[in-house]
Length: 150
Image (cartoon, rainbow, N blue to C red; front, side, top):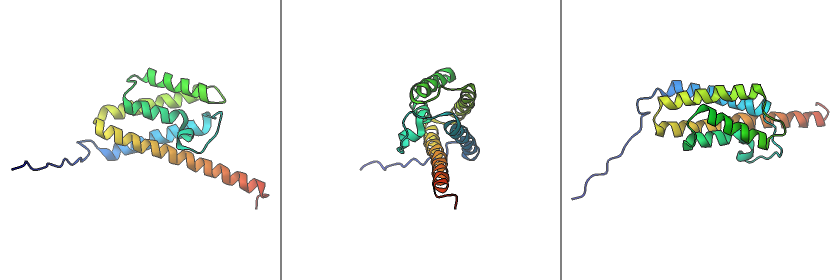
């Protein structure tokens, strides 16, 4: 006789996901602000990879666990920014990134690995949505100004 298959059901694993999702939204706002105001890529594109810029790399290294410290994460992102942006990173941009990384490290300490990976995926697409919304708004403004403001 075979053994029955046991199905594991994840219920947040003891984590208050509602409050953490609010924190993830705050981080998404910070990272979208950084992309909108401080990051100007050398080449523009409409692929998710190019739209996300250094933020996509940040989320990827946080998911993989490649770096553990805040300093290493910020240094990695500064390097990506300076190598792919038309303008060098500013103090204000670094401050935004530091606040976002602090918040992410705090969230990671409160969650399990399984929940953490899922939250990073949500963060990834939340930032992408905010950035795409901004791109569409700018395109609409440009089209309106070309047509004479009608």
